[in-house]
Length: 109
Image (cartoon, rainbow, N blue to C red; front, side, top):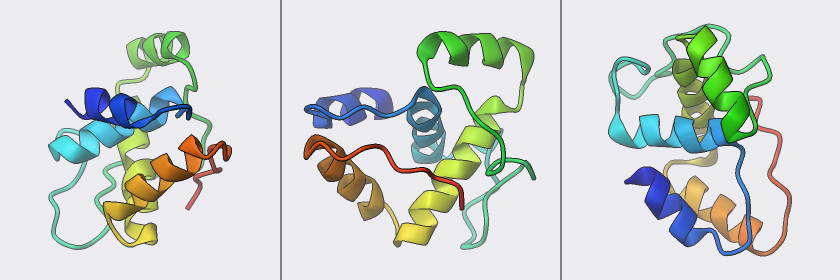
């Protein structure tokens, strides 16, 4: 449902596939890919914020077949972005910015 909600709110904006997938994992609180929500960093993977992640659906599907940690990496990056921005309202502000025509920001915490 997170995918559907995000895309319903995006009038003109676009998010990379890794953000879409990472946000869905974060919203679901999927502990296969994130640590429990205890107020600290939820990342299960150390490299979650450093490497390039798949931008398109085709790239995502290829990468997900080859790298079982790609969901954890995407969720880590989104989780850190949301935490750094002060919580869930950060995503709403991003959607508003994208709908105003602003580019997707570089999210490397």
